[in-house]
Image 1 (spheres, each protein chain N blue to C red):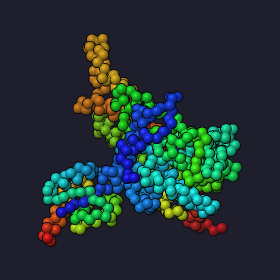
Image 2: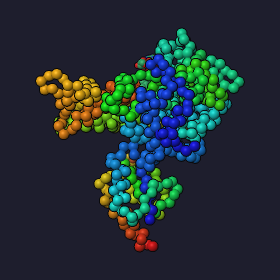
Image 3: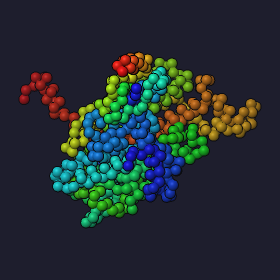
Image 4: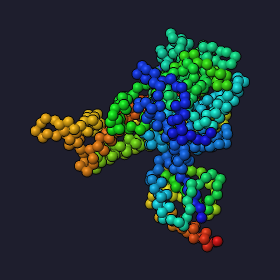
Length: 493
Length: 95
Ligand SMILES: Cc1cc2nc3c(=O)[nH]c(=O)nc-3n(C[C@H](O)[C@H](O)[C@H](O)COP(=O)(O)OP(=O)(O)OC[C@H]3O[C@@H](n4cnc5c(N)ncnc54)[C@H](O)[C@@H]3O)c2cc1C
Ligand code: SF4
């Protein structure tokens, strides 16, 4: 099958029997649901741009498995250049959507599972790598979107999987059969899960032998028997269902999506299993997936940052504050922070190296530094954007008020809409509606639905800040640095 | 004469590459045929439109008989057209 277009992708979702719950009810036509559809549009653009000559160079790559052209989101990185192109593609998509376009988790999972299965087979004589190659060929040939699912609900954070009061709080194998396994548990915070054709499951932490039934990796269709999803609500999400959503949502076309994905005894056939009780490889898989995903943020968040910096500069124009030196300086600071993140994304890619399986791995230390900065800089960029925009970002009346023809019974006899348009204008030559739209766009990114992707995902996605600090400590070569200091200071012992 | 057009991937272009192509096409009118370059398909001249000075696309897979002309900023459209013009004139003399 050739690369899908965005509309073919959307139609392909309709053919799935994905079970989605939202506000306590099963949603049958979730593809057209106004709260879900913007996130589907976001994934659709990853398909459309692959056909666009202006972007296809980044959006596609040649598969090492089939020799055919595939969407880069289904590609195994074959060089450091591929790793850099991945980051560039993510920046591009962040710019186009100002949202989380969701398809990265799958790409990062493919690359982590590919190299880990190779090394697991080497030690245990298993056939996971062949299983995975066949699976990925199927994904590439059908141009599928796959959710890379790692994070378990985790219950008591102080306890190992096998020590939890409820054993389902980490996803586990509950039965081993001749033809496959049965799994039970859940994956939390799953980005784009509802919009994915398939799920690729990985363990969430390094494990000991006592936890071996939790050391499991596999793939299954999103509409597998026993699998369902409960949609994660976002700040201001019900605005998407309002009549004048076009203005008040801030970004009507695009958005992100997370869900809780529940596996209530789901059967997984042998050829879709990529790890099954080899507990000593759980850590490798986690580290590699997290590493790739920490690199990803050096692209996607930068693209979203570009859109926010643009909005901040534009609102300064609309407010008539664009000439103020502190405003110019704040825009410089925002750009500096944003490009620093990009530097990190590019650096950990440029220093990439081949794994034993042949696909390329990022430099882990630099990827962790990248993500550590991502846990901070978008927050500062948001702070500066809110500073430049002014308080209207959070105090402006609704779009209905601006359109209202209800007369206010005072001397002037103006309508509510006329009052709004009179008092919410900035620079007189700029239509008030433009200012209104832009304020809402900034609100959307700073504290509305897209803040899920731009702020909190920057904090916790791909691991909370402490997870990176542990990796930085491990990779930072402090002993080597001590030796440098000793030598330079003339210390001999 | 066929001019193959290859865009970079457009991660962070500093100008509108599509508009630049439209301007170049207009400048040459009927004198030059334009088509998107395809891997392994030979064109007479390759016009590479990059979004920035990085020019990060590998062009090895796009063979071009009379060479490659690259554009990476808006200001150079005139200069690029002049270079394409020179190649065009040279090629017609060679015939
Ligand atoms: C928007 C968004 C999208 C995401 N998308 C995906 C996805 O697509 N796929 C996926 O697999 N995951 C996804 N994640 C999950 C993400 O990886 C987790 O949020 C992250 O690992 C943190 O886990 P948690 O949210 O359970 O927080 P917690 O683990 O509860 O962390 C909260 C705090 O407690 C600390 N803490 C937790 N446990 C310990 C401990 N044992 N010792 C010391 N301190 C501890 C943490 O460092 C942190 O400071 C997403 C998250 C978000 C917010
Ligand atoms: S040439 Fe510049 S804009 Fe184009 S893909 Fe490369 S780095 Fe991005």
